[in-house]
Image (cartoon, helix red, strand yellow):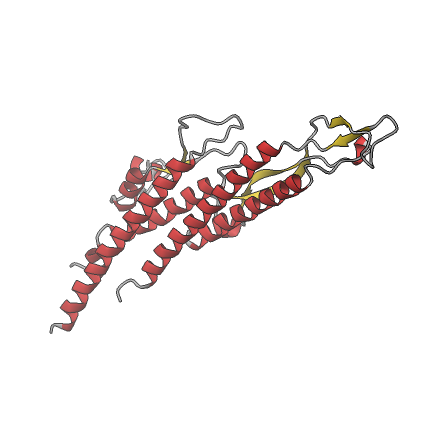
Length: 127
Length: 139
């Protein structure tokens, strides 16, 4: 039986991950002038796949978790195009572009969610 | 995990960049403060930035970091000894010590600091818009 959670589809998970990525990118930008700071990011595709995939149930100690779930959402270090002398790997322009891209995609998910909510509301009212 | 944490992270960066602007202002203001003793002469100051892992309870174990100023260090570059016999602070041989402030370097530093400040403000603005949108969801 379809539930309200199904009506929202992938978007709640996407919004949560976009929030997480915004935090990581904000931390990168904040540390643009910190010597030795290594820029980080999350692999959005893998993380969203892990968040939405039906995970394997592990019932015994020897069972392995699904690979996707194990690799989703953790922070990875960015490969610098050209690291600076103080070992800082933040490229402010790239980080800003990524942050903007992330914010717009967040907005897109919000628009979809709003549309779904409007649809549900009109279905409930039945007018 | 929340967008509100971005305000802590970017806020700490604003703090750090403000300290940097302050030291630059101090260096520029004292660029010509002559002295008769080398030990008393003004030396250029620079803040040292370090990652600041925010309150572990709020951040969990992901180690996202803001910025903190670890301290302010004085430049150890040699002071300039100028021959100015008519200077009121000149020593017996007619020399005064000038601060080791490099004005060109300080100007570049100031521009870099103000740009970083601006970038962090923009990050906060974008986060604010994202939060406002979330709050008005379904209305």
